[in-house]
Each structure stands twice: as structure tokens, then as C-alpha cells.
Length: 405
Image (cartoon, rainbow, N blue to C red; front, top):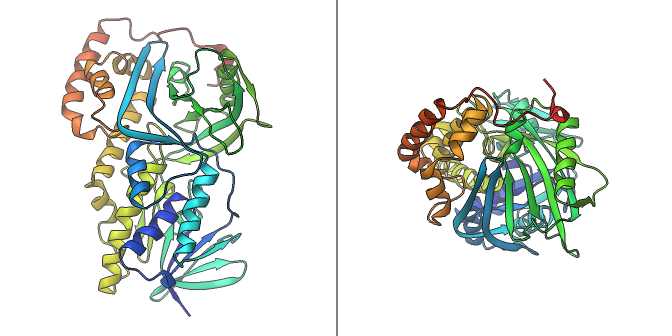
């Protein structure tokens, strides 16, 4: 018997897609989730979910176990510090626990969940797509690619992807008096060392433990050797008095959202990181929730029409609030990580409008596209001021430990 929908990937995007389709009236017997892992499974992730993400989870009726509640963030560098206040709660959680809870909720609703299944490819057919696994080929009306940065579904469908960066991360214990366990620290000093990204210090509420933190670094362009990223993370930990609690500093790819990424073809949609995450801040969970909600609505309409096409899937998402914000983050990432990064670092950390928006408590993290004109004028003024400075020179001498060019 051919089923209607295969969701490849049981992480937050895939689970949310299933829950949204259920909410829209799709029968649970029409869906199958396939994932190569067995849950709960380890997952590299800073472990924070922003206010818009917490609202999405609450609407789905899920509150993560062992979460830490905070609304405090800090963007910092040697050029200054920007405190960030959101409109509501942020949660810090254990990613393995959150993913497992979501998938359990889907299974409890009657959706078939198959763990430990590796999808090897897609087999085209008339009116359906075949999903090939070790057990053979099973045909579906629709295939949803929710299989993350390395998305085999995207590659099998020959869809154009975006920039693939990387992160490294490890769990630490200890820390000196400068470490606030209730604040999420985003350190942009890596940009000043020619590393296109930021480092982080996040509390880690792992079940059954206390006093743990996650430290890591994101390379938003995928051009820095992993050895350099691990060295930077180790140095960051040493500067703040942390001791490594993990066996090693692990690495993982990240796939970023962009205007040229293809996310659909007949009978197939990409969601979550398979489509792309925030290219500036590396945020994945809250955008995945929004993408899945959008995709579920578009898919339900196609199902109601008996169609296997979602016309204008990408353009339609660009018109949503989340799509507009991700495009805005894409433009900012190009400025900060590619176009005169030292100058833009000075501009961003001296922008009165950005500081006001960040500290007001009226805005949402990474969701400032609606302020684009006002911020643009302010950034232009700051940029013109910076031109009067010796802006061709880095704000400080680069550290030879992180030289890789």
C-alpha cells in the first residue's frame, strides 16, 4: 500500500511538520517518519530556543523537560557589548531530550515512526516518489526532506543548496566569576581573527547534572580548518576558567538559508536545515518551526486539490515574516562575514538604533527585517563615520594562533 507522505528526518523540523499536518486534519495513517538514528540521540547544538520558538512549542502543547528559562543575552566583542532583551521567555534545553519529546508526541498521535532507517536515495516514478532503504523501495505521493545539513534528499533531488559552514562544540564545567549562568553569551571576536562567525558560552541543563556549559564556535562560511576552530574554543574556555567535560571538541556542518537555495520539486519539499538555518546567527530551531508550519499549510492545500505540485514554494515563504527575516539575516551575514568585516564590526557595535532595538524588550531575536529602513539609515551613518577612521586596519592585531589563510 502506498502512503501519502514520507517525512525523512525525525528532528524538530520533521516532527513539527507532522504535528502541523495533524492539526490541519491530515490522517496520522497517511504519514511515515523515517530517521537513521535511534532516539534520544546526541546532537550538537548550543541548546537555546528563542522567544518565537518557545511560542511555537507552546502552541504545539510541548514544554521541554529540564529547561532553563532566561531572557538575557549578550552580544560582545573587544569593541563593546550589546545586551539583548527579548519580548518573552527563552529556553535553554538538552537537545537530545527536546527532540525525543517531540518525536514521542508524534508517535503518540498515531504517526508511524521508523528509527534506525537510512534512506539511500529516491526513485522517480509516475505519480509518486520511491524512497530507497535497506529494506527496498517504498513509494509515496510526497517526500518531505527534513534530514538536516547533509540532506541526502536534497542531493538525490538535485536541488541547489546554500553555503555550508561548520560548528565545533564541547561541554565544559567550572568557569570564573565573569560567567553568568543565566545569560547566553555570543562573542563576535572571531570575526576580528578572520573567522566568519561567533563563539558562544551557554549554560547546559543536561538531565541529572549541574554546573555544565556548552562552548563552541561557528564558521559561517565553511572555510576555516576544524583544527583552528577547536583551538579557538579551547582558548576561550581557558580564558574563562572552564575545564573540558567532554571527551573531545566535536564538529558538525551547518547549512544556511539563502535566496538561491532550491527547496521543492514535484512531490517533494525541503524543510528545516535541509532548506537552511539563520546564516548570521546560526539559529535553527525557531526558523525550522516556522518553515514547517508554512510547508504544512502549502502541502495540505496541494493534498486537497489532489496535486503533487506546490507552485511558488520558495517565493511564498519569502513573503512570510520568517522568510523576510531570514533574507535580512542573509544580507547582514554577507556584510559581516564577507564585505569588510572589521569595518562592519565597528559599525554594528556603534549603532545607536541597533542598541535601542536590542535592549528595548519589544523586538524578537534575529527578527529585525521590519526595522530595515531605520536600521539601514543608522548603519549608513555609522559607516560614514567609520570611514574617517583608519578602518582599513583591523581593530587589533590578529592572533597568529588562528592564522589559516
